[in-house]
Image 1 (cartoon, rainbow, N blue to C red):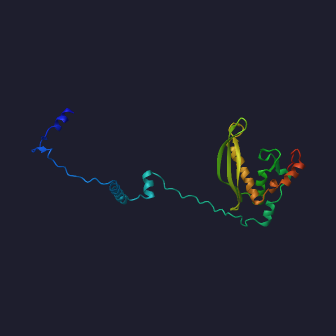
Image 2: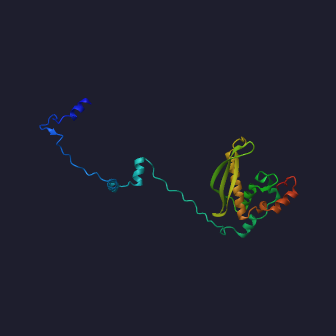
Image 3: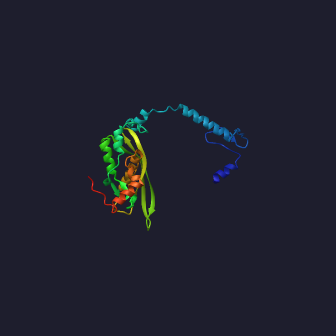
Length: 239
């Protein structure tokens, strides 16, 4: 620091290997015009655009080769599903599908309420297999989602599972609905899969209802008549 301080008071000094003496007091430095902010930004943008034009984009094949990736396989195209119930069923098949179910196919405990009855999903699946044919129909899950909540006293954590599904018969959509199921995390006797299957079952039943299969379960008159015939909910023996 002292060395530089002495230099500031010197009028001139000589650099090594230089033959002439530079006088700093009489030196006139050239003036530089400082660009404005707008000019600077415009210049930088022009430079960036020029560099971008020089870059040749790589093809997908080149990128895959550089990354050591195998060529991507084409996506499988799912069969088209018609959104309307076109006439893919014969009139006699429709009558057979929408016919009433025997009392033995109903069970108590709909929605967890022992005073309500419901139609077993096994009976619905058997009806579709017998009338339409195995492999000629399917229940398809469109999407699923969940929500956390608490229930009971004291409150316990639980998960409500939603399933949006649709009933497909011979490539045609005949119904769509959302079902839900509940999984209580503190209940060791059940798990998430049980709640998921319950949501699927509810969605499947409602899809069948859209087409008119098993409408008895949604008829108040039929439910009251069934309960009056079986006051103890002792349903008749299946044939």
